[in-house]
Length: 434
Image 1 (cartoon, helix red, strand yellow):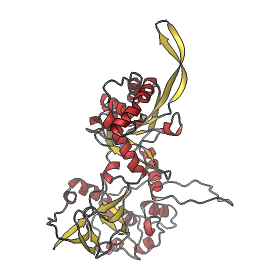
Image 2 (cartoon, helix red, strand yellow):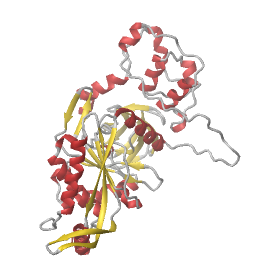
Image 3 (cartoon, rainbow, N blue to C red):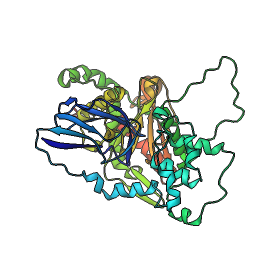
Image 4 (tube, helix red, strand yellow):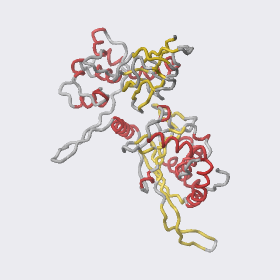
């Protein structure tokens, strides 16, 4: 019998750890290949981790609510299959090591190591421990902070809110600590002043995803000076063409043809024309992304929002785009997305028109520099130019709202991008698209 080490796999770009939220198997249980053994949560998504072999679960090396690093051995499975236990590439990945160094404080003097211990059956992430050390929070004080994470775990927001209302704060940090700590002071979300609860008011605790969304939105507005450009597009040709081919498309492909993949297809074409919106900012450097990885905002049944990513969207036909959109949207609503499917986006599109909104100023999805909001398609009276003169007719129109980061995207580029997209939509021809 061989011993198979089930490790925490890579969970997506920039993710270095996850919290164990549940064991789905007990010691002694027989596990089929691809059976889920445990579940984890990251700041991006909840995931199930399956076994790559069949066998009997012999050891659990972590408890529920433990924080596990990528590549850690979580369980031992005894199996008859031939296996070769090798450490995953991610453990040796220099990019991961660099990311980890940004959130973990360098080696402290021995008298300060007490902060690293987990006490009172609570577990602290490296970032929480780093903030505690930087702010001079003792282990005893840290143990008293109320946690809003799963099973009472202290999150980054918990410790930041505690610091904001803390009556005592260390007056200074030793110079050696300031030099060795690479943790930047995270943004503090200020609470509204004068907040008063009245009789009958209902207090609703944010769930984990809503807290993450709130933090990311505040961070994005803090980081990027947002500018918006608006263009109206006549999409009558697209509406008529889609209505004419949608039934045949469904019979042939078994997929619905909505307007979203059509618009995304032309967003990609526009990005090819203006690749400087497909960039990211690193300090004073601009990183021009080679791949076009298109994020699409999806509203979830619980009211939250998630942005799955269509990787290498520029390599897809319209049919391929439609299948990708339908697949990701369906699995997003069923909470079945994989971590890699919500990371790595380079440009995002949100279809606010599906809720009847005609326009909106979307917030940029960091670290991207632009996002396109698609308004509702409406029948509008319009002037139609003909050789015989101008006429008034009914046209199908929509508003494109382009939000962009003014650090690197000026009004000319942001405005021309929206104008070019409108031109593609207005000059639409369905020939050879399907």
